[in-house]
Image 1 (cartoon, one colour):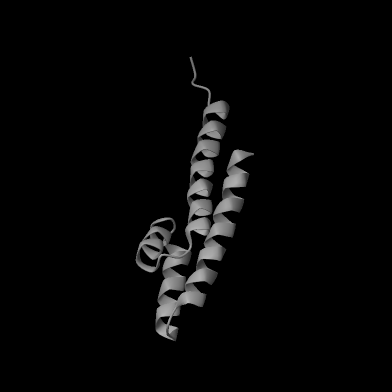
Image 2 (tube, helix red, strand yellow):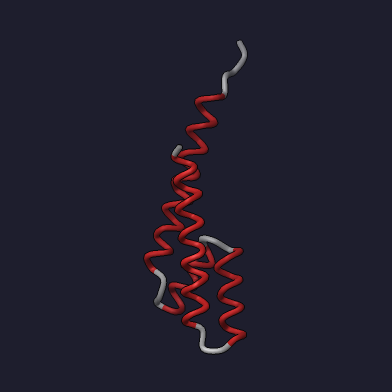
Length: 86
């Protein structure tokens, strides 16, 4: 359940960052580059975008929270369903 929430947060944050990158770009090339970086390289791309452009803090927090929830939820699912043989 936590992993599903993580996927949703990650998806919403990524889409929001891509839209923010496209809206804040000064020319078409910059818009495309930032949009692709934010789409394919999360969360590192979002962190670099925020540091360089000073925009997109809320979607970046959503992406990071999504990754944390994915790791925690996936780890809990793995540990609860994994039994070592005797």
